Structure formats: C-alpha cells, structure tokens
Image (cartoon, rainbow, N blue to C red):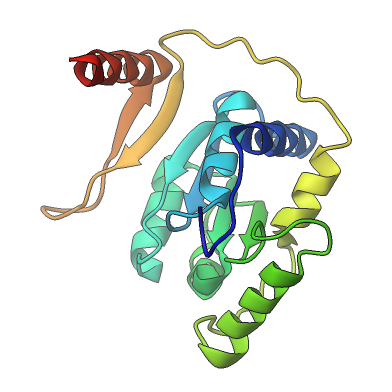
Length: 204
C-alpha cells in the first residue's frame, strides 16, 4: 500500500511482463544491464521483475548519488538502460554523457496510484512538482514515461528467456566507503539460495 492505494501481485506480474516485452522491443538482450534509480515504491518491483524476465541484469542505483558517483556506476556496469524517479532526473541528465546509456525511462511518484485516468496519481505528481518543488528542472528529450512503456509493452508478449543458475541477475554495488563503489555479481542461483534460506528461517 502507498498513499492509500494498493497493487496486487497479479497486477505487478502483468506490468512486469509488459516491461519485459518493452525492453526486448528496444533491443535489450540477455545479460545487458538495466539501471534502476528509484526509492521503495510501487514501480520498483515491476521494473525489477521485468528486467529479470527479459533476461537482463538489474543494477540498483542509489537515488541520492551525485553526478560523479552515478557516472562511475553507469560506466563500470555498462548499463544501456536507466529507469529513474523524476525527482533525480537532473542527476541522470548530467551523468549520462560519456556512458553507454541509450534508453531513459522516467517515472513519477503518482504513476501507479490510480486506475484509468489516474486522477489521484496526476494530482500527487502535480503537488510534488509545483507545491513541494521536489523535482529539479531537467532536459532529457530522449526519455519516455513509465505509462507509455507499459502501454507499448502490453501489446506484446516477451520472448521466453532460458536462464541458468550461473547467469547473472544483479550487479549490486558496494557503498564505496574505502574507494569507488564495486559491483558484486549475484547470479540467479545466489538469489534462489537466499530465498530458500529465508524460507527455512521463517518456518522455524
């Protein structure tokens, strides 16, 4: 639940498959890196699972990164796609020159708060921009919106992507307290093992 709105597991799955189809339509191949620069919100699991369904690798990005920190992570990971919460779009604008990023997706806090015309979500987005003034001005003409990407992806079915235990699932970057941040490589096998460990612990 977020701001009084709910989202079901079925809805997350439906939209994750739509996002996976959109990624594949953009030419994203198995093993390509997709950076996610956002806080904990409804959109995050959709992008995360959609990236994995497409066979790509999730690169989580701290939304509070400076331009220098973000540029390093984008260059080091080789990400071709970045999904960013609009509040941090200015940082992306300044960081992507000199990187391999070709796809930029923008999402706003209210994008998934309502159905249909999403009046509630549009109102929340307006408050964030005009009243709270938490969205610095940015210029990303190549960017497309979450809702557009999901609408386009929903017209297609993602191609099944065979994945093995040793295939990379995440590049999870360290805090960089003793130097530059480094990407820890987590495979699908690593993630599944951790889920099984958690399940066993929770059952006790």
